[in-house]
Image (cartoon, rainbow, N blue to C red; front, side):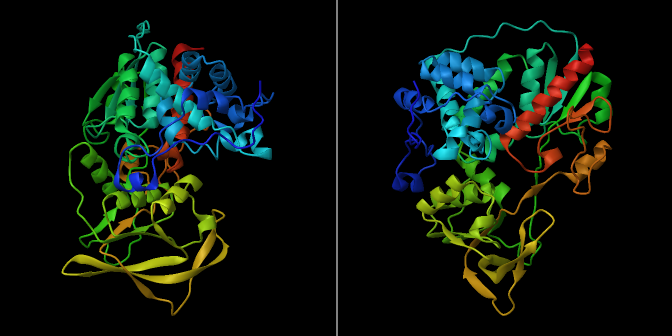
Length: 457
């Protein structure tokens, strides 16, 4: 039976008052009844564009939703697990509205099926109701794979290859498994307990992790290729960008990446972030949304987003913008910072100039144009730069791999093989900063290509 309601089942969440003062997860998740009701909104269309066009890893979306309709939640989980090793993560942080839900037929007349919320429900139901049994150990095929980077791309490649019988070792330069999942996404969006649980499932597949080991410092590609049959590089885009304006070295000016790391460490009993009165976040992407919502939770009197284009050009997810507003964040559009002001080495303000939108630039964005004579100062004692990340060009150069003019690794789009035979790469180091699921998709494509090459299939 199909539920023809045009509006999706609303996801329960904490009140705004609770959210402003707590780092616990904002959204509470569906009950079993809610999940079944929402799953029944699926029209069971023939083409399945949600899966074929929308999902980078091609989750069997209609099949797992069918199982939910029938109350077979564990079967739904097993279906999801054939294509994704991180369903609880992807159900929370993927841009569903742009991918699977953006291609849902229901969105033509009404709201799309809440595929992300259903994926999250299935993964959470499994974690809460099923005892993880030790996977039957896959017979080893005698071949060894090195994975560099324990982020989404590396974890996806490692999981798939381990399931195929390869002896997989993941090298991670930090002491934490998960990359951006571990310390780049705030607790209120992605609880660390969820990440740890998903990683434990990989460890159960006998994936080996060597932490504190960095490519280019502790070992070279030559070293890896001398010991392993193939190498996958999934190091991400870990170099934070700045605006290169005066005052970025003042006390109270942070890179969003460092700010979010500190906030996440605090949740694990680590560093305490200083208390500031007025915090200005520069940028309009999802990292800026994570930063501003985290800043609200530090107890600041005022939190502002300063963005040089209009709201229509903001790349952040619509839901994140809406929740930021609900939590009291002020949005200042068509405004470009030109200098960070300070006294005695500390931030005291942000000097800006107003802008207007001009012609499209090379990426299709309308270029912001300064309006002379509109310089003004925004009162702030903390400035957080959330203007993007890039690949580590120094690391790429050490690897001796071919890269594009932006310093991103060049790979075959189908196999993910780099300019060096036997070395594969995927994720943000190849595409620039994108999504968790797109990085996972690259890791899975690389795993398929590696297996075909090494098995001769």
